[in-house]
Figure 1 (cartoon, rainbow, N blue to C red):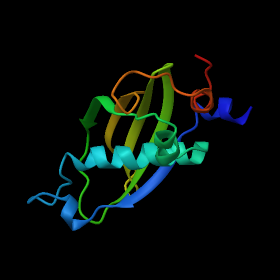
Figure 2 (cartoon, rainbow, N blue to C red):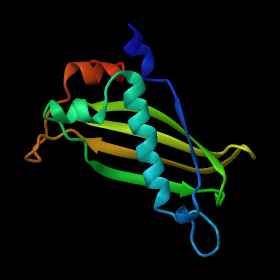
Figure 3 (cartoon, rainbow, N blue to C red):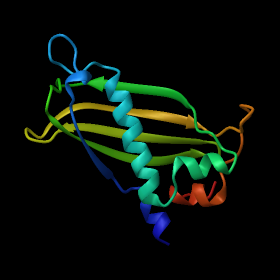
Length: 141
């Protein structure tokens, strides 16, 4: 089954650092990495066959409950950035995305990180992910 193979797949997305993304020293402001994480996971889901919109229309919201980012090398204005994203099903109600942020021209790893998301209903109560979404991650929990 294709979706079972998808769990180990890395999806790559690219963005270019805008001037507005940088601080006074010309270095990407730290919170922008979290925005790039969102770009990566949105694209991971899209390429796996679902969009956030479709998941939310099904009554599931995926708030971030944990985030980690380790900054390794600064990214700067006009750098092209590649966001490498992998998804993992932790349980029937939690997923994790792992990210690598790479400066394309130099091949330098700028940052690594992860986000963990809970599956909740619109009222904020835990709700099991639908089987079709769980299968995207290749495990039947």
